[in-house]
Length: 582
Ligand SMILES: *[C@@H]1O[C@H](CO)[C@@H](O)[C@H](O)[C@H]1NC(C)=O
Ligand SMILES: *[C@@H]1O[C@H](CO)[C@@H](O)[C@H](O)[C@H]1NC(C)=O
Image 1: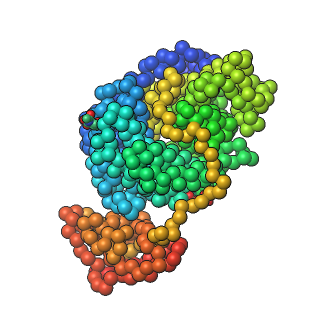
Image 2: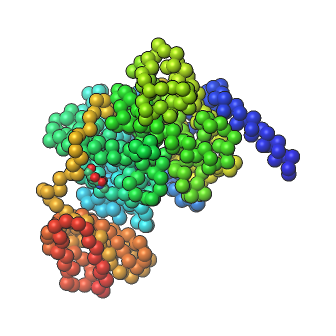
Image 3: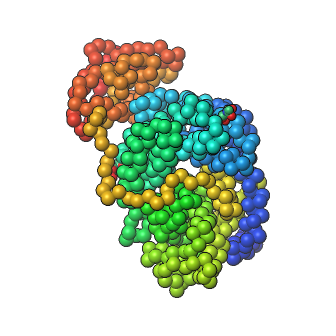
């Protein structure tokens, strides 16, 4: 075995060396061959006719066809919205007009999913924060990291992009009658809930998350603009007020001593995380220059963050070991990751490239590169002696930097290319030891991340969303809750059920569905037979409630009398510890 191993080792080194030199021809040909594969890979995972998504309702995006280790045959609001943002951008830019049917199906699917009562609540009680659903548009009721509050923001952004296009085509009726009600649900949710904790995009940490906050900010800004266009001025001003507060909060994720963006306020890790690079590319605005207020890709803070994030993976993956200190390398979610032993992800590695292509685009548009004391270390990777200052596009420094950074960006594509199997299929991860595919196969988000990185490499970007010239308010104000104050109550009940039965909660106030068993809220099982559900209910009130059992055919069994009574405090949170009364 040894000689063969050695031969493979030598071949591997040869490929590595060519990658390290930023071999443009290889990257060009990979982009050319992988583009149609990635596009087909996305479409195969969209119901009802996608080749790998049988059983998915029309417009439903499956995360991956993988059903075991891991089971990803579900639809996540985050993944679906990011995927459809990429498709909608292709449609509205005229690149692919055949996508209209898929987009219309997506709109219908999301309008249905928004209404599905689920373990996070109903449409009006927090259900929009539910991270994932079954692919037939029913609720997923197992335990999960919920809520995840980036989904509604990302969905709003995808749909606003389509709405803006339709308005430019004088198709206002579809926008006001069909799109706006869906978008408004999501924006109201973001407006009302951005200041609550959330699980992060990796579904692990319940705190505040940079990615979530950044995409929430974006959705409120472009939502306010659309609301204004549609004559909804009071909604617009509400969204703008909260956008200001969110932008203020966004600044607090910057870690000045570490020179990076801390991904989550909780979690007990370094906070170095692909979360931040993904946030930068998904909130890129072609008109916002290198503004650090919104962490634009060429801002000093986003570049410093790129350096720290990428460097954190140089020493921990074998496949990066032979690459030079300033070469593009394979990167994963975060350096402490242990999921599937902790490997590089295609979408994270593509994001490194995409951030740099976006930065290059802006430097060319603006006509200069500004190096600050914050971004100096990033630029020293290419010119060790560089000092802070502004380098106009006529200078040789500008030319050297842009050419070196373009090669660097290409190296991230190249290492993904090198670890793409011969058929071009993109799984979620590839082995940090030998580059073979790991985890879910044909991950829709991996394909979408390839498409957007390739577009960025070709200088094709989406429309501006209004990040230009924003300033941070002087003080950060949490949203006012004085009008209808609520408290979060975690209802917990010990209830023994038989197969096919589920426990629901219903009660005397709107938030508890006014005793309506049809819209009663499904509870989730955290530790059977304990059923649990957190609901925001009016503060300082006396509330009555009951648990009900529903069986598979929807028949209801009420808990025995009397009603449970809860007197809520003026603020804070509380939990009940009930036992179901037969
Ligand atoms: C408006 O757009 C919708 C969604 O694509 C489409 O179904 C409808 O035919 C369009 N209406 C007009 C008048 O173009
Ligand atoms: C809510 O907003 C305030 C003010 O910006 C901030 O200090 C706090 O951390 C935020 N909390 C959450 C959970 O977003």
